[in-house]
Length: 117
Image 1 (cartoon, rainbow, N blue to C red):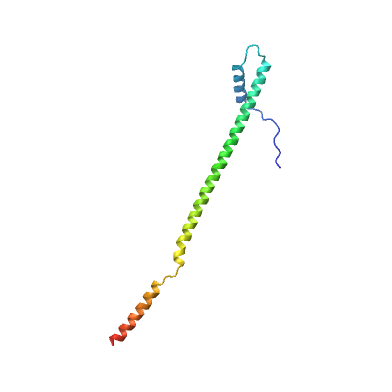
Image 2 (image 1 turned 90 degrees about the vertical axis):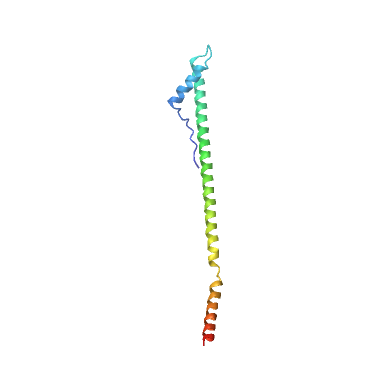
C-alpha cells in the first residue's frame, strides 16, 4: 500500500507573497504582525488546497477524456469488424448461376451437334 505523504509542502515564494498581500489588505487597525502572519498562513493553506483541488479535477477530466476516446475507438473498431464480416458473408455463399450456364452451354452444344448432322 502507498503511504500518504504527511509532510506539509512548502508553498512557493509567489504564493507566500500573494498571501501576505491579501493579509495586509484585510488587516484591521490594532492587529499585530503575528496575527497578520497567522492570517497569511491560513491564506497560503487555502491557496494550496485550491491548487490541489484543481489538479485533481484536471486529472479526473483527463481520465474521463481518455475513457471517452477509448470508447469511441472501440466502437469504431466494432463497426469496422462488422463491415468486414458483412462483406465476407456473400462471398462464402455458393452461387448456382455459373453451374446453370455451364450445363446450358453443354446442352446447347450437344443439340447443335445432333441437329447439324
